[in-house]
Image (tube, rainbow, N blue to C red):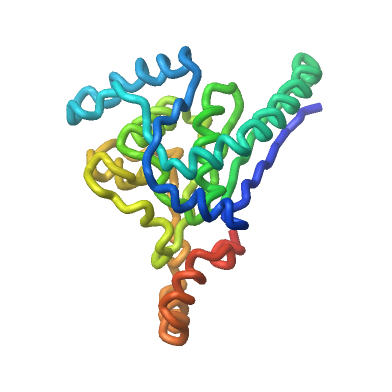
Length: 239
């Protein structure tokens, strides 16, 4: 008599010239992650988290994200949202009749991983379990973006974020950090400000246990081919 409902949304990475153009739009643009009421909630929740840290950690500004990633997210978000709304409408026909556990899984590789992450942040105020799983994710946004992400994960343990990466993949280190307020991933942000680790944020280096094998591969192929291999989905097949 119990429902255990799972919905999976997998977002593809770079597949054509238009996606490649998005990858190369490295300038930062304002991104309004939430509607106004939810933006206020994030600001309020952040005050007690960052009060004992650098004054620059106060949430006063909107986050900036990679222009190309923003464009790609806008392109697919309406579809994702309409699909989830349809799913939520379906749930209303079941509530009160059955007990349910509901999970939404958002995953993506490379360019797709950036949309999976931002979409998960946008859905963080829905009363469901949100699971964000990214593979070979580049740096998505700036200093402010990571403040929002940290706050959301800190205050809502129903959201889980797992980041898989391969050391040697050049994409995970792009866009390049220009200054301390520039592009960074969540781990870099947490480490820089010595923030409390998050139990619902996990990162996994897929090279672990395969170091010798990877070194053999590296010695026998060109540097460019090796970097392409380390970024490929082949690295993550077992996951």
